[in-house]
Image (tube, rainbow, N blue to C red; front, top):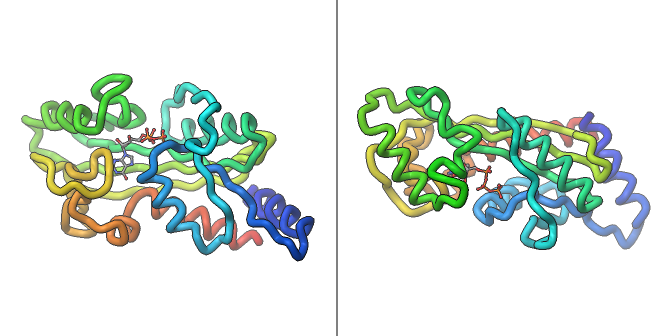
Length: 217
Ligand code: ITT
């Protein structure tokens, strides 16, 4: 499957010959924190990255999938078809063992449809108040679709941790200030971007994706 993606990119490069233009890949997110992570970790592929903020007229699809992978596929296919471009989508979120996997695919909307990160974090702390077992993980699913909507390559990554009792630090975004990384031995809210990129669920999924693509080239 990955072969087809690399073929699309290779063919486009051959056609432009000497005036080789880097191929545009649209990252299907408005979240600038994510965009930064993607750009940094995929820099070596020599692609041009844009994101949904560059296409403000496109409506969002409803994320109806019951898994992160299903939502990543749904978003990649929808935006690739709508824009007629290669599109990379992710779906990610926090899963807490003692809450049976919640907030899960509802991570962004845990405290309501338009909830802020602060509201989501506050509700999560409230729901976890009596819980002794605080094991949690970030999960990230990635999917790349061609302009005709076919899924070309997929990957996933996990970042293990413990849920803190109160926010620590202001780095990162979303649930980062509540997440104690068992790999970094510090809260993600206090981690630098380089530190987070060395262990994050998205970073692991992106590295897998980059390797899959390179191997097929
Ligand atoms: P897009 O839909 O535009 O990509 P989003 O932030 O809503 O932006 P998701 O639908 O993937 O992204 O929702 C994931 C939510 O899970 C996100 O809003 C955060 O609350 C949380 N999340 C995901 N990755 C995270 C990370 O690395 N650090 C902190 N929180 C994260």
